[in-house]
Structures are given as C-alpha cells and as structure tokens.
Image (tube, rainbow, N blue to C red; front, side, top):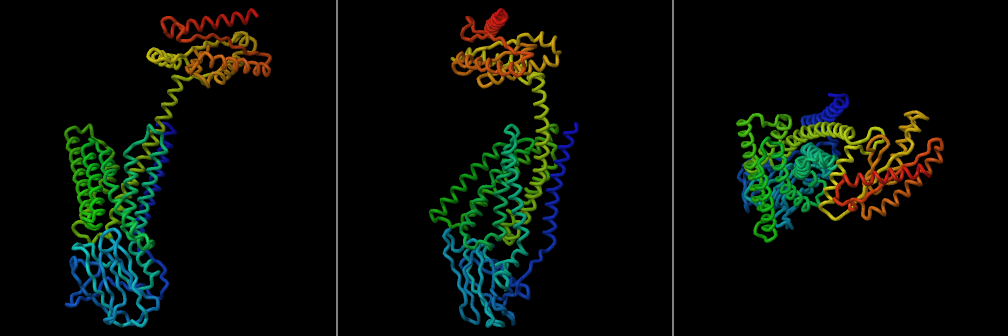
Length: 562
C-alpha cells in the first residue's frame, strides 16, 4: 500500500471515529436524564397514575385502552393538589378519544374534534385544560369515549403545570427520541448528497436507497416522538398525513438496500415489495377518499405492507444464507455492514411487533428504531467512505496508466497509440455512416538545425511550442496527436471538414508569425498535408495517411525552395 492509500484510509478512520463519537454522545444523552429549567417553583406533577374509575378501579391514563373499547365511555377521577399556581393546566396527549372535563360536577372543558382526515379524532393532538387556583383541592373527573377498539386510544404524558413547563416536561421524556430521529434524517441526507457528488461510474443505487429510506424513517420517527405535534399544533393534520406518507415511502428502498448487500440478491423479493407498496398505498388512499375506511382504520393496509416487507426480507436472507452454505466462496465477508443491517432489521421487527401486539410502545418504540438506524447508518456510511477512497485511488491509478498508454510524455497530447485507436473508430463509423472526415499530417521544419544549434533541450521546447500551436488551431475542430519525432497528425470530423481545416490552417499560420516575432532565433514553420477520407478509392485509413503524408512533403519541399 502506498502513502496516498494509507493517508486516505486514515482519513476514513477519522471520519468513522467522529461519527461513532457522535453516536456515543447521543447514546449517553439517552442514559443521562435531561435537566431543563422549569419556570414554576415546583416541577410539573405527573398525572399518568392515580386516577380512579367509578367502580373504584385504579386507572392509568396512558393505558386507558385496557379499561374501555370503541364507543364505550369511562369516567375517571382524582383530587387536585391543595396548592395550584395561576397558570396551571392539565396537559396531555389525546389519542383517538373524545372527552369532557368536570370539576365538582361542573363542565370545564370539552373536546370532540371533527377530523378532516376522516376519523373521529386526530391521530394525536395535545390538550391544555385550564385549572385555576380556585380549583385547588377539588375533584376533577374526565369522561372519555374511545373511538377505536385498540391500544391507540389513550391520554399519555399527562402533567399538571403551565403550558410552557409542559413543553419542557415532554422534551425531558421524548426529546432524545426526537434528536435521534433528526440524526437519522441528517445522516440520510449526507448519504444522498454523497451519492450525487461522487463520479457517476462509482454511484451505487443501494446507497441512494439507504439515504432515501433513512430520511423517510427518520422523519417518521421524529413525528412519532410527537415533539413536532407539540411545537406545531396548528399543523397537526398535515403532520399526520406526512407521518403516513413516510411510512409508505420507506419499505421499497429498505428492501432494495437489504438485497443489495446480500451475497445472493433476490430480485423477486424487491418486485413483490414494490408491487405491494404501490397497490396497498393506492388502496389505502382510495378507501380514505371514498369514506370506506377512515384514516386510523386504513392502517390495516400499512400493517399488511410491513408484514410483506419483513417476510420478503426474511426469505431473502434465508436464501442467501443457504446458498452461501452450499458455496462458501461466494460469501460477502463484509461482516461490519451485515451486523449494522442486522441491528436495524431487529429494531424494525421489534417496533412492528410492538405496534401490532402491544400498542403501549407506540410512543416509546422510536428510540429503539432510531438506535438501530443510527448504528446501521454509521457503519455503512463509514464503509461507503472507505470504499469511495479506494475507488478514488483506483481511478487515479487508472488515469495515470491511461496517460502512460495514450498521452505523449513530452507534449501532453495524444500519442501514436491514441491516434491508431481514433483512426479505427473513425474508419469504422465512416464505412457505416454518411459523414466524412479528413486527416492532416504535419512536420516541424528544421528541427535538426534547432537541435544542432541550440541543443536538444531547446529542440524539445520547439516541439512543445509546435504542439501548443497545433492544439490551439486544430483542437476546436478535431484531435491532435504526436506520432513521433517532429511528426504530428490531426483528425477533423466536423461538418464540412475541408472548410473547417482551411480556417484552422489560416489560424496556425497566424500563430506561427506571433511565435516567430517572439523567437526570431528559432523560427517555427510547420509543413502540412491533408486528405479527405471520401477522396480515397477504397476508403481506407492507409490510403488517407499515404496521400496526406505525400501532400505534407510537397508543402515542405515548396517552402524550402521558396
């Protein structure tokens, strides 16, 4: 390994270390509780527990679904503290319920939203019930009606405090989930930008799939933390639709990326997920628009889609593992990437099962999914960076080899090998198509005299000057090559090549005069001969070369006589 390769690998190691450090800091932030400055003297009072139903049963508002079903009413009560501040509110996150708040039998607040999305209530909306100081010590009763017979009907994160303090209280509980989600989005954006910045030949669709899937998953997890709903309550409907859109956007990119890193790809699994993604997404939209199902009920299509995704992914993994066992030499040995993806896959499965079976993790499962995505992104982004460095090094080596093979070392223009390749391509095209081209042969006059008089170093400068003039005159209309010694050739394949050549030759003569005024001691004159491909009887490059060469020597002889 050369020095440049070692340096690139060390840079990749630093980048990986930085991302891993960020990941570690975020994880530590998840372990260490946040401490935010509350405006009131006393911190918010957690009111999730301590409620009692009419039959004396203790009730937790965060698990309200355990005590009621769709259309059923339950009344829960508790005593307010003996001391209340003037700006106290009963704050909570209302999920798919309607409710009425009573204090000592008197109605103080009522909520029964008409949701424009087609369901009885917004999927999630924050409520702030004013509780004045005069209500201290009194009994508060909440009469709730669940809209659905599932675990998404609840009133979690209830606290008695000011509205501002409730925002800080909520961030203490869910802020890390939100920050982790934004980190997933940020790294996803980096991966997408990296895809468009690298050279096209090094682009990998699996990196684009990872970036798009990560952005969709990260935005969903950010919305799932409910922090955006708290901060932008007026846009609740739009955020609910964005939440659903992100859920439908993620499965196909996830399947494409998962298959791309397998030793044995299973295209059929990708097609199945794509079809399911489109069909179930359209079906859900059609049912909501027609009123057949409301927004919440349409989740059955989403569950089916993710079930298909997990089944297809599991089958693809099992198939790849089976084929590897039969042929171990075909195994992809990049265990670092496989471990990162496995962690994320397990997090997806856990979240999906929690949503379907438990439901109670609905608000708290996003940290697990965020951790899975961050682990995968950090590992894979580091892998991409290291691969990109290796590809760049390989490209630099390839470019260096190309220059050695096709570029003249002295003048920097194409050499004889490059000329032969260009001639073959033009000859083949001219035989099959109707366009014409010409070959111009050049020879630098009196190079031997310059070498003998001024030395070979000046002679080399003379040749470099000749190549510069030829490239400036003929470069815009064709390709210029140094064939060897003082011989140069140009291939002109533009429309009406003879007229273009005449203009370029006139420009060459002007450049010669300018050069000779600056260097009168070693005047430069380039003899020239030309032949059109169509002028040869058999239409071969050999005939074109012979005729152009002969014309060049005629020009040289005429100039010497003059």
